[in-house]
Length: 256
Ligand SMILES: [Zn+2]
Image 1 (cartoon, rainbow, N blue to C red):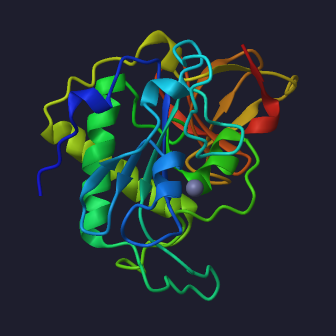
Image 2: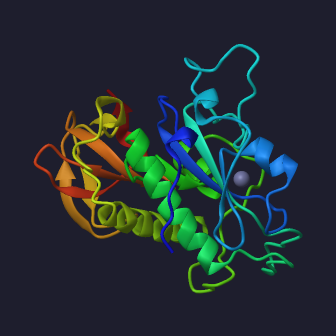
């Protein structure tokens, strides 16, 4: 199914992240859903525009008194809220998706819609910039109240947990962007990966590993500058100045 988003839904704004949710409602968007998110994806894959324009979540463009879409606790500025309608009365453990489970058609439409939004606003596909609500707390270190959208997919029981679901989502969004022929070029300056310096390991060095808590494959001396590409618990994926990508313990990195 080819998804498109009218240009009028995507006004100029400085948007830096896209958060993907489910509504915990039925397969059709209700008035609360329309108030809470910018773009809704109904059970059959149909898109609905939320009441708040995307630009209302850009503090510099929000008109006085204009409501914004409050989709994520303490993380709404510069963030687009996309939500799949469903998961009413769902239960996390043991997993029970309830009477309005997310559908595969809905998921596919969501990944295409997010790709269009990412292209429009220049949001790169990383786990800190395009993420599910369940990833906001681990990936952005912004506490949420036990939000588990999306840690399980009713149509794919093999993909379980916030990171696995988020990774699957980003793979499919990246593929959708490729299909759009998007010029994914270098990200704008504000989107460059955050940079850090190795600090506090002298006279030893920082172990550089092939995965979170993985095999040691190298050593980074004090003062080495790295870019952070990803996070898994306390382990950070980093890129060294020579372009090597590996994992290190975050406690020895200081922001530059
Ligand atoms: Zn949510």
